[in-house]
Length: 419
Image 1 (cartoon, rainbow, N blue to C red):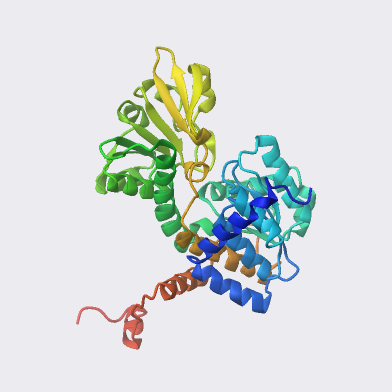
Image 2 (cartoon, rainbow, N blue to C red):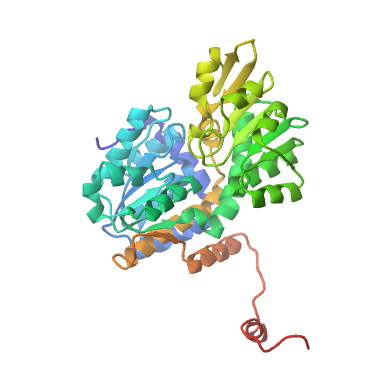
């Protein structure tokens, strides 16, 4: 297949969305302008497995302006904006394989289609593309010079590949850049998760007990936003340091088994499996609302919930009500998939500007250093991180101080102390 999108006639609306997002992505726009002039990615083939949103479209435009050929597929069955996919094909000439609501078979068919260009670079959000290469398409690996990974879940999977000595090429953990996870994960996930929940439920969060499972950067963001809207936030954690931080941030912290009895709304953001399982569903209040904002829907044991339910029905778009023995009802949002993309539009463009600036510059770094890197997971080069922060401040019209020569000397010395 050369492309597979829902409807190419949706391109006009899609292009308007892309242009709207671009207004809030000045750092990426500056990189795109330089790429157009220098063509640092000339003759580079990139297979990308990302959420197909208006922000991603501007990343794809940037890579193509740099001279790359890009094949894009979705990194989640519900994260595609069909009008944006249509515009990328019709208006910008990208190869796109993504339809919102695609089933599991089509999802993986699209991943395989994106790999048909025989990529030099992989760009992943969750490592499904990398997994496909390492299992069923090993024949393509000799042509791959490197890759990037956008999200925490994907980085975890890649580090497992590295630990087991089977990672076949170098990959940069874009997720771990300070200009990514401190902003995209915290502020982007925080706002967009709440937005997705409210879009499909129209509930008032004020006064509700809101359970956040996982207090990484994404969990921090969701807890902060829920608290700001008046919810009583409960945090569940397995990491003692993160749990302690949540306590110091003013939240109640307890095991999920205890929180299950108290919560009105639950959101998982851990990257792990069965965070909310059958015993927790059984303990929940009648009418409890459950959502996931971690990368994969495995955080919720939906198979177990299905088995313990006597019936289910669709109440609203993206809201399915399960009835348990005894009549208790549990509402699951967005089929347990990323609620911010299933029911909303994902992260605002202003934070994706930095995330996708990292992606663009890391791809350029990989091309320039082809053959020089070991087969391991690398951090984003610190100079790229700092450059993006400076560009973002410049775009916001914010000036900061610089160290004097005396101050630099003091910070680099050991002799000087108390005067």
